[in-house]
Length: 384
Image 1 (tube, one colour):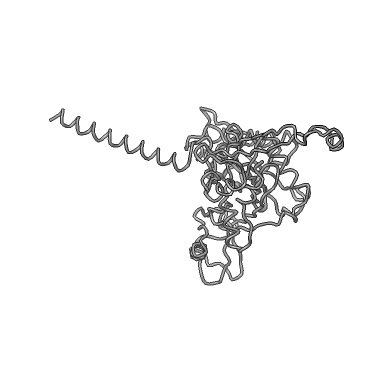
Image 2 (tube, one colour):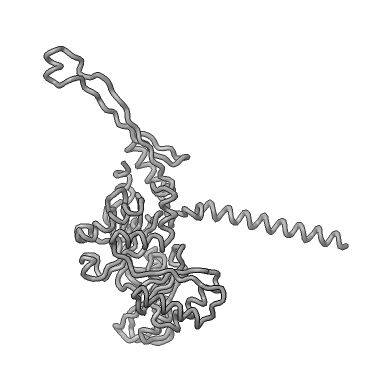
């Protein structure tokens, strides 16, 4: 009986392990290696984009995910006058120069992608290069720190960095807005947030000053700005009849009808800061921001910004950021009240650099607006 019990349980454990390994493999196939995960829609997985490169360049290896461009160079003997005078052949020789680039990780090297995943290291490099980033520092949890000690240490570091409330607390490595806490207005709220992050297993976090404004996504490729999208915080407008909760449900339904994303990450504390609760009836015409997580996948309003409307001083810092980090393709998150004004005038700041940027946001804006902009065509035309 005992041996049968052991055999049955051992079989169950084996089955569980096999199932877990299968789930891990599925996740890895879908998201890729954790160190170089592609955000949402990776370029290497878009057949239409690869088809464009095949038509334009010498060779595309879909298995190795490389693209090759070969250029033939004709070497002439002497000048045109000398060739005519002495009857020399027009062409002495012909060389073929080929260049091959990997597009597996958005044309970037793995080391560059790993670098920009480290928010502290990225911000430090940008700051050292004189580029505008929010004030920041690394907060490390001590092994014996209680909440009072955590608060005291945070205030000390904030004072040293010249940061005042409100602040942002977030994980140093991470994407999709996971464990990013914004608009932290006082030390009690900060202490509670840090305690929550420590309980999740974080040993260190990043603290930043809160920068107000829209969140812009700037797609930079091979030294050129391809596209700029403004992402505005999702909000509802009161009708004097429905509660905020109902208005959010109604907005989410409209988003889905337009094939856009719902706002699932609702920031009730921020709604409270605006003077309301979820079940309050919102007065007619009153706007309330419903989330501090400003990205397309959380229902942010998205709109393309004409490149010509962005001042040169702003465009230059986006190009320079890629150069500083040694990255060819990036999605820069830039916070500013208005990107069409110099960052020096309105405290615009580079928030983060994404080494495997989302391309879906650019195609969705084109579909919604009905314009002829094609992000894949722009990238394919500028690979070399």
